[in-house]
Length: 276
Image 1 (spheres, rainbow, N blue to C red):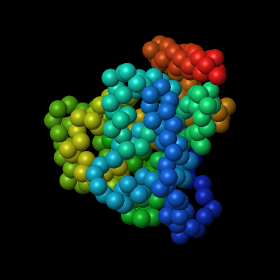
Image 2: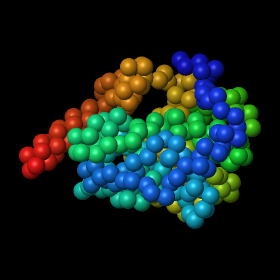
Image 3: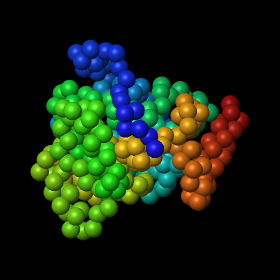
């Protein structure tokens, strides 16, 4: 089990420098690349955070920040039912290294792979410094409680206005949605399964006010200390998603989608080169 003491945000910068870093990032000219009919925002992690903070500052509506890896891309590609969710997202970011490889095969260059957990920790630290409110929804009750106590231990000034497990019956779901509506958090982190999480967001837009919604999937388990991170070999190569598949081989559907993804990209790349 991961030791809670290991949960940290490494930075040698002073608080003012840290905050100013995002304010000085130029985000007017955002580049997009298209993979399998899905528009992905081509941003570095710093640019992504600056964009998220800018969206929050404008407070025009709620914003869904969607992260993609090969499995999710295959389920949300053009022609699939879930493609509608990608089109509604305010920001679509690359999480899995498989997308970096796919982009190169298709003649693009992704600036950076953005791990969800890293972006989460950046935003949590920023939220503590700027007194932004955060809400956690997902996973199991014991995981949420461990996550809560780990975070307030390392970020004592963080304003967590709500924390609820993702196991919801009708009564509890209504209570949670009302809690979100009343607290109107700046950022909502969701730790549900894919695609339940994305469908839940789509079906409950009336409760989110002007919040930023970020899907964290299984990262609540990691931050709580319940689930170990992928080995360094997989982490450094952006293959944490592949490790999760290998650790749970009974998820045959994910294995098949991964194979389909690589075959699809190789075929499209071959077709493109042939035409040239």
